[in-house]
Image 1 (tube, rainbow, N blue to C red):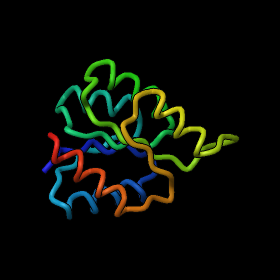
Image 2: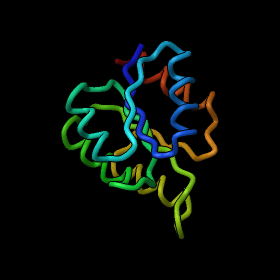
Image 3: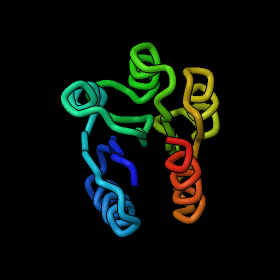
Image 4: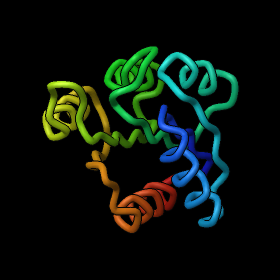
Length: 124
């Protein structure tokens, strides 16, 4: 199973995703913003990063660019429901252009996310 770094500022969403990934047998590290995520990835590298896009303290697009610059083969999944004045689809398109391997709209289809995690974990 994989070590997943989960980056999400909404505690309720983060808790739900953490519990779901743990039930699937993955280990989970958490961060609430891009800066904390980069520090955590430096401290203990993850096999997969799942990040929200709209967060205080550094957005997910910046995080994706920074992660891919350091480790281009690291799988990164982006998740967004949009933000103030920005449609979710627009943010997810930008995340893909920044290097996200997969993008997911909120509300999340958990089965779709878990299938993608399983696919990536099978390659690593």
